[in-house]
Image 1 (cartoon, helix red, strand yellow):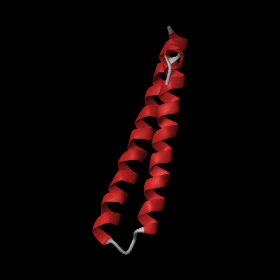
Image 2: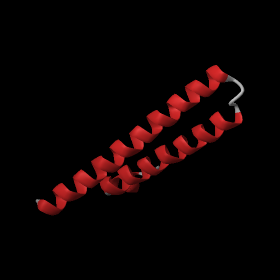
Image 3: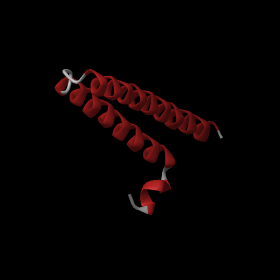
Length: 72
């Protein structure tokens, strides 16, 4: 990621949220693929949940920043 991506923090946060959503999807796919390995699947489910929460937080931060910038 180059410096220009950080010129607009809302865009940067949105891109990070998209990456986190992709991590969640990949974690869930890996969990399904490795379902027979119960302990591994449990960790992958936890990773999916954490990535989903991260994406939600990043989207909320982007929305809050955008709202605050428009209100300023």
